[in-house]
Each structure stands twice: as structure tokens, then as C-alpha cells.
Image 1 (cartoon, rainbow, N blue to C red):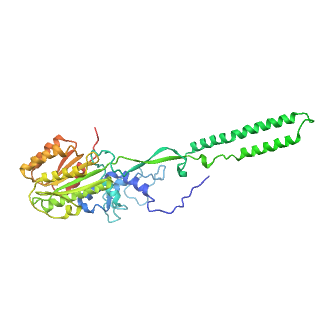
Image 2 (cartoon, one colour):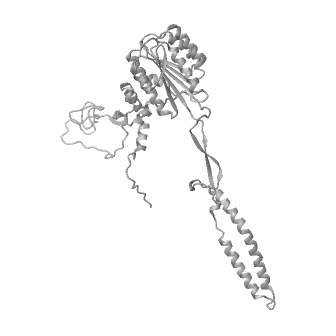
Length: 428
């Protein structure tokens, strides 16, 4: 019998398989804890992991124990309550002993049963946060300035690395070479052997000993030449040839549009910032080729960098069409729809000049929506909707699968709304 002993050093991920199996088994409990953590924590703290607790009753497993077996008719000495044949009552949950009273309760006779707690890493935490989410309608665009390549088979080459050697082709070439090189030698050998046989069949008087010795020497030389032909030569080796072929990449750009007018209070802006930060983490995690464009607006729109988008302070009136027009200009100048997947996420309190809301609807219907894969609008307000929401409802009716709008009242609504906007949709 053979025994295999694993003498490898214990690595830090030694139990990674068991841990992943545990996470898959209790995914429902962990996901519920993660959702509570997201609503409880600031989105800016999403970069760290989370400590998750699972009730002990949910991780308990059935256990088989060996009893004494047989039929027992013993009554313990000193027993004043029972006689032979009485049935004993099952212990209730009110008394405390051993593992504690009830599920997780404490007792004066033993220790309580704690919940099972463990820590999720940052990657595991974000896996549960963004589980089931995707950028809708992501499409493969035409090849343009593509950096992504994939090695593909491109025939057979005479040179290459040993890892790519083609055994079948190499042996075929070796077999063909041996046939070609040994054929004339074999032909000459057969002719020499026939000449030797003819010479040896002659009458001893007519036989030429020097001729016989010469033929035997020639036969020995030809046999050595046959043996000298190598079975496989470096000339025979063939390798699988691989070339880098450009691949269509899923390039996407997300336009983050936020209202910074005077009607947007600091609380509204903080909620909008948290929404975009969550969106930023989602994009960073799922797509390598994603560019972000930040557009702030009040009466005028301006493209800014990330720091200015999240932290600068401005006041003024509200003209939403200025931001939509700027987004349309940026798309025309830098992001052709044939090469990029275009997404727009807008956050506002719904306040806008009445006449401008109609202009926004026209811009979306006539210019922007035909170019976009998805447009999301979140209105941060506890009040009734205004004209902008009503005009956007017209756009949503025209593009039901590519235009989504939701209302956010408080910070706890951010994560549920985000999951609703970017949930994975099953194509009909």
C-alpha cells in the first residue's frame, strides 16, 4: 500500500476551499448581514471588510451518538419520584445547564450559547455587496485602439518553446525524414548483398576472394550508415504557432451628473456622493476598461475631476438641460457610440426651471437615448415629484428597458435603490 504525505508548508490560504464552501452554504445569512452593514456604514468605508455573525442554531448539524443499547429496567437509588415503567419528561428550555438556557440565552449554572462570528475580507465583502449586479446592455464594440489580445493557433512553426511542441507533427516529420534518408542506403545495401550472393555461388575456381572481402566491407559500412540515421532530429521538431489576435473589448464610460444648485442641501449632496461612490466601487470591481466623467451643474454645467465633483461647494439656480447638453457634446467629441458603451447616472432633488424640463425630455428622446445603453435617475427628496420627474416618466415609457428612475428619501435607501437600478436582468 502506498502512502502520500503532504509536507508542504502551511500557507495563508490553506483553508481557502473550506472557507469558500462555508460562504456558499450560508450565503443567505451572510448576505442579510452584509446588507445591514451597508445601510449602517458610510459608503466611504466600503473598502474594508466586515464582521458577520450567524446564529448558532443555523450552523448546527445533526450528530449521531452511541447509546448504551438494549432495554434498561434500572431505577436509580434515592429516586423518590419514579418507579419502574414510568416515562421521564423531556427537559424544558427554561432551566440553564451546560450550553445555557434556550437558544443563545444565559443561565446561572453554565455558559450561554454565543452567535458564531467571523470576519469577511474586503474582496469577500464586495462580492456580497455587488452580487447579482451588472451594467445593463453591455455590448461588444468595434475594434479601435484595442489593447486586449488573445493568443490563437496559427498553424505550425519550425521554432518555438518546448511547451508548445507538437508531438504528432514532429514524429511525422521524423518518420518521413528517416524514410527519405534510409531509402538509398537500403537500395545500395540490397544491391551489394545480391552481388555478394552471386559471387559466393560461383565455382570456387572462379570465385574472387578479394571481391568478396570488398563486398562484405561495403555491406558493413552501409549497415553502420543505417544505424547512424537518428530517430528524431532537431530538424524534425514542429511547434504550435500562436499569434496575438486583437479582441473586441467591453469599453464603457459612465457619466456621473449631479445637481449642485442652491436647492440641493448638504444632506442631499451627501446622499448623492454616497450613491456615486458606491457606483464607482461597482464599476472599478467589475470592468477594467471603464472611464468615469463627472459633470456638475446649477445654471451652467461643468466637467470636473473626482475631487471637485465630490467636495467642492457651489450654489445657484437649476438648469438640468445644461448638463445633458454637455454630456452630449462630450460623447460627440470623445466617445463615439460605435466604440463605447455609454451610461449616464444622474442625481438631483427634482428642482428645475419649468420650461427647462421639457427641453430635457427633448434632449433625451432625440439625441441622448439613441446613443446610450442605460440612463439612471435618482431623485433625492421626501416631497412630491415636480415637472422634471413627470417629463422623465415620458422618456421611461419610450425606453422602458434602458431608462430607470427611483426616489431616495434617506441614506438607508441608497443601497436598495442601487441594487434595483443595476440588478441583473434576464433577457427575454
